[in-house]
Image (cartoon, rainbow, N blue to C red; front, side, top):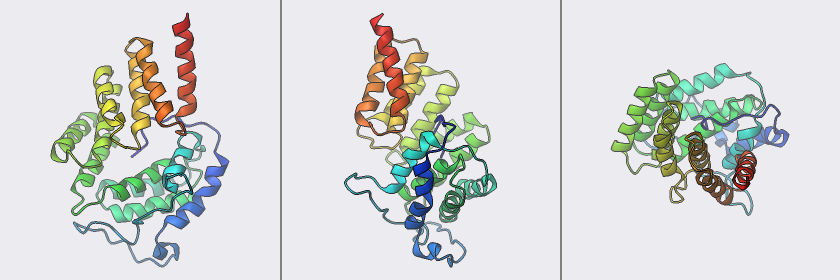
Length: 268
């Protein structure tokens, strides 16, 4: 999954880029790290792929966040401009979209390790997180979400939206439901349907969702509120909620600038 519609700065985050190989090395399974892993074997209803998807990730001292989440946030805004390795990423994406999740996880990790300056590194890390967080016997919900992304990648927005709604109906309690909801918010935004985009985004942004997409959903809802020409105070409340709940988010700096601009306008 792309972390949807994020703007990338032209300059790299040096610390994040230097940290990436070591973190991926630490997160990879021992067999994979030893470069002696057998060809990936994908489960068909067997649940987790223990060779390639770590059951638990190391956590940063005192932060309560695993290193994947922290690194993902670091790269969201400061991803360097480099396209080397695009073919490897596309192969990983193909594996993911066809439901070969264990193989996809390995390929995404290798891509991120070998091409840490690629624009798609944060997407690759997000896909590994997505696989890790949503495995269950049969992987039916994850497979449907992968199919949803494949439709959208192919430019079939209507079919992707239909697949997302089907996923929400079939798996209303799956953790991945927030990704479907966010995808529907994005599609509505692209169509200029501001109220629908806001409605879906606020479902993701609800404080009870605990979704890592929540800050992005709050920003999307705020941006769509502005685009509708609504009272700026409504957008301001959404942006302030983002800053209060996610002060360390990579979205915080641009959102603070938006808040300052809105406050200036309200004082005129």
